[in-house]
Length: 115
Image (tube, rainbow, N blue to C red; front, side):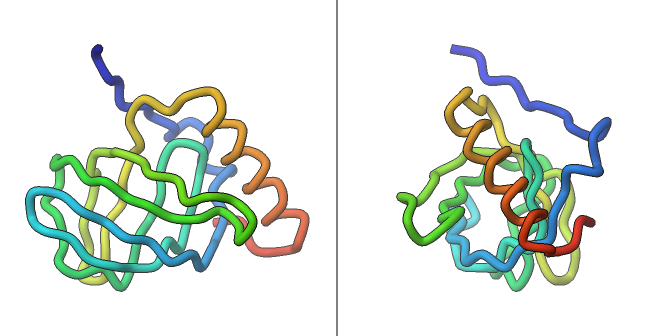
């Protein structure tokens, strides 16, 4: 089954600031970080160590809220910084896309900033 990386650069207004604990793993090893920005097809993770290389595949696991089970997502690292990395999720199914949309709407409703 072919997995497509979804490009959401056309919709940056849907990005919201968050502070969600995340676990990340890949061929580089793995670690923990903080998901600081979330959008329907990707995320920005900071305080991450070790850092994956751009273009590499990474697995991330996080909870959108305390009452939901953790989501495990696979993505491609699109950028790294001194503090962390950006990831574009691969093959997002309809259920997960709906969860993201509701979580982003709820974050905005609570008054947290959009990025």
